[in-house]
Length: 443
Image 1 (spheres, one colour):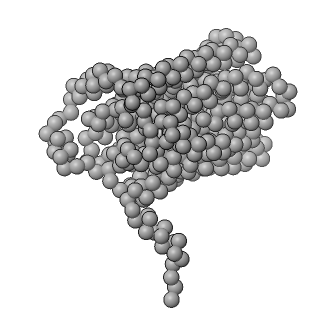
Image 2 (cartoon, rainbow, N blue to C red; image 1 turned 120 degrees about the vertical axis):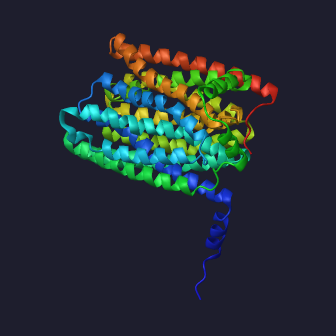
Image 3 (cartoon, rainbow, N blue to C red; image 1 turned 180 degrees about the horizontal axis):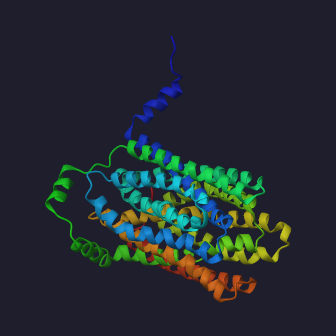
């Protein structure tokens, strides 16, 4: 008689527990999300470059999709608050996202209009992920008890960094083996088609996560209250007069602004000053994610011992090293620049993984439960607006300074000072919150 091994039986028994199933499904969901994000982060700029994009058009890669997300976040946040289940809007967003990736993969065959269609489909893919992430935060808060959030989020992030190691490296190696631009585009097109499939599988994982349905009392309240613009005003007033929310929002906003300003310049610096090509960029993405994969467990442990508020300080310290790396590497011999960039930035910026790990947990604590999806959407709108404008502004500052080596150094010196100021604000917040006993300490 065939019997399952004892450890397999225990695994199935464990998966029957709602908390365990939720954690595993969030891990699977995060894996598919990170595949798409990794290909976006690695491939979008290369995709545009191989289609003949200019430096200014590279700057628009962040601007256009995030402006679309900014416009959609508020109405979708309102809609999400009035749904019977908080998973409905994330599910629909993922389906649209999957279809948009199939469109993005088809862009190179569109002739002279290829760049126009590139930005249109980019709006629905990169912009769609920004919209999804906003609604995911509210959904995550609904289905995961406060005591479990650090564990579930850490488990999910480990899955995410794992696929983040593999996907860009495979893509980069395949591109590096091709000589012609058309062949390189074919490789990227294939990976974007796989992004479409991954988004649909991600939707399936979200659909299987238990809970998310609102209580009969909450539904009754929604039915008795018709939404109006006054609700938005009320939500803004509630957080504008909420001292705990403001002490989180303002320093974190400044941190994101100091981070976003060099997102497009990062690619320009890598390719034009650090000697990196498709292969070295893909190796960098893979090795960097290995560093993040190792670091995430350490950061989660710091959350448990010290607090998410303290761990966020380590994250901004990592970000402070980025402009220093970008100024250091171009001084080295050309042959060693790519390897030096990979090693230095992977080691010094390992705590970056703590940004998402900590910010979500702190946000869910300080955001009022009333109109939570709407408030998270409003918060994400502001962060998304920063991510729209600041990368483009960074390229324009670099261009105005002369678009040369001197301009690169002046720009990164400015970025360094901005991130030091962001660290000062976050450290001040940490001291105040610690004194008042409001730290977010994971269990």
